[in-house]
Length: 454
Ligand code: BGC
Image 1 (cartoon, protein in one colour):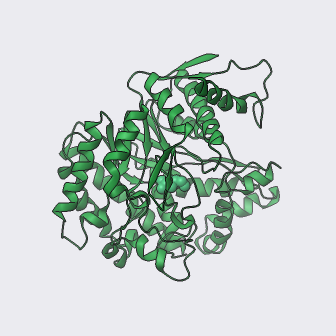
Image 2: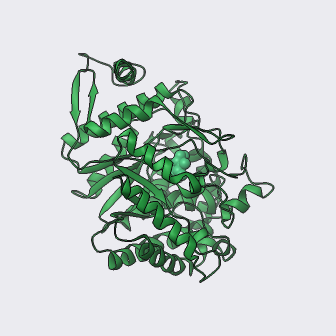
Image 3: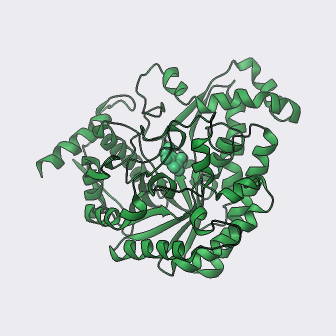
C-alpha cells in the first residue's frame, strides 16, 4: 500500500444547495417550475431533506465523520421574498447555520446563488434582465453582512454556465425554459456581471474572505469533425465565465464526467464557419444542445456500458483533466474542487469514484498544482433538479418518508481520509492498464475492505 498525503490545511468537505435539501422553498422560480405542466420535472421538491430544520444535526454528523468544511448555499428567495423587502428572520436563520457550522469546528463555505431565483426576479426576466446583477449585488450585501465574519470562503454563483445553458437555451430542463440564442447570451452576460458585482461587494465587506465562483467544467474529447462543437461549447459554457474570474482568489472546479463529440471530419470547416455566423448559429444550436446533453453518448462511443444513474460516463479522473486546464489558464491560482460525485445506488462505486478521483487530484498536487480542497457532492441524497429524487449522490442516505439519515460506508471512508489527511491506495501493479476495470478500479474495493476491518 502507498500513502497519498495531502497538504496541511486542505479543505475536506461535502456540499449541499438550499433548494435541493432545505424543503418548501416556495418563493422560488424552481418551486413554480416543478409544478408547471409541460416542464420535464419528474417530481416536485416538496419537503426535500428538511435540512432547513435539521441543519444542526446534519452539520454535527458531517463534523463527527471527520470532515473540516461544509459548503452550503443561502437562499435569495427566502431572504428577499419581494423586491427590496429583506426578511430578518431568514437572515437570522442563515446566521444560525453559520454559527452551527463553526461551532462544530467546520469551515463554512457559502454559495450565494445555487441555481434558484426569487419568483419576483424570475418574473422580471431572470438573468436576462439587465437589472438582475444589481439586484443580486444588493441581496449579497445584505446576506454577507448578516452572515458575520466567520465565513472565510464565498462562492458567488454556482455553475453559471449550467444556469445559462440549462435554462435560457432550454438544454437541461431548467427554468425559464427559453430556447433561443439571444436569451442564452443575455443570461451569460447577466451572470458574468452578477459575479463581478458580488465579488467586489464581498471584498469590500470582508477583505479577509476568499472569493470565487464554482464552474461546471467537462473533460472534452472530440475527433477532428467534432472539435468545432467542443470549442464553441467550451467558450460559451466555460471560458467566458473563467475569464471573468481571473482576479478571483480561487477557482471552484466541478467535474462529473467526460463528454465526447464526434462528427465527420469533412464538416469541421463548415461547422466552424457556421457557428461564427449568427443566423447559422441559431439554426445549429439545437443540434449542438443535443450533443452536450446526451453525455451518455460518450459511454456508447467507447462501447462500454458503465454509466452513472445520470447516464454519464463513470469517469472519476475527469476532474484531473479540467484542473489541468484551469491550472494552465491561471498558473499559480488556488483551485478548490467544490463538487465531485456520482449518482449511484451502489456505494462501492461511490468509494471507487472518490478513491480514483482523489488519487488523480493528489498526483496533480505532487506536480505542484495549488489544489486547496476537495468537497464532495453531496452530503445527502437530495433533489436532483428536473431528475427529482431518483439520483443518489449522497454520502448519507435519506429516507424521505421518515427523514432518517443513514451514513453510507463512503461517508466514513472519506471522513477518515479527511481526518488523517491521507489516502492509502494499493501500490500500482507494473504495466497496469490505465482505463476500464483494471487494478485502479479495484483500489476503491481494497480501501473499503480495509476500512471494514477497523
Ligand atoms: C450542481 C448540483 C447538482 C450536481 C449533480 C452540479 O451541477 O451544482 O446542484 O446536483 O451537479 O448533478
